[in-house]
Image (tube, rainbow, N blue to C red; front, side, top):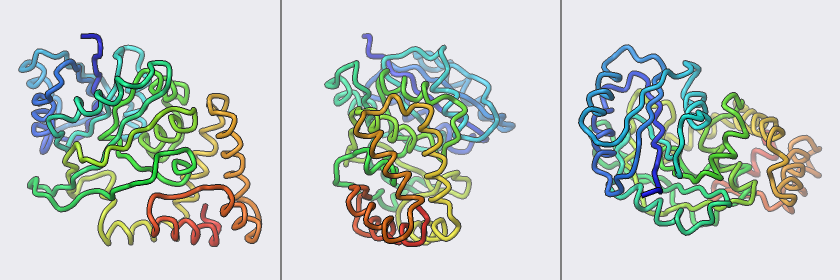
Length: 306
């Protein structure tokens, strides 16, 4: 089998939930995988748990020292590591539970794509509490993934993502030191912007655990809506867009001609006066996946928070 998958896991103080996540990787129906764990300086039993897991499975398990600069840098360093050599790479958090067919579902689609074209698979998630009990699902997005969506919204969690070599090469070109708000949104931007293919699977492939130590919270419920409203008033959305706009300069030559034009129009929308800004947004095709999401996008445009 040549379609090997490198699972890239970032860890930090993950001992509480890590065994359940590792066990779900062990139970994958697709078995041609290796695990690469980049630990950001854990002082609990995280590394002992990983070592014990490595001794119990036939698949290769590698432990690396993380950069200790946060989870985004940890994942980017992993995906850019030249020692990782596989046909596909999959991101993994330390505290979720993968459904047993997660890798198999992703590869069923990825194998249908040309090796020369960047391809990124992601999916919906089932949200669970600390005890593993279901508390809902992530929003169901029905509009096709696109660069015009990626510029203003991230639709797939990194913990669901699997990509081919061509997609990974875009992340490598973007560099491990890219100043970005999240590695998963960045992957969506790069692959869609370069004319690659993105598959959003409406079927959940993981149980996404919500607990007090989550670095990134759920995207569902009223708490999430309040959090997003607060982000708008605190200019976080505008800051994220500024980070993306600047980081894309490094790889702008890899974008399609059409998407380079769209990116420039997006930059203009952010700086123009209100009437022109709204007209440009209207004709641009920029959009989010839901009605309320698009309402918030227009509110952000009025408040100059794009």
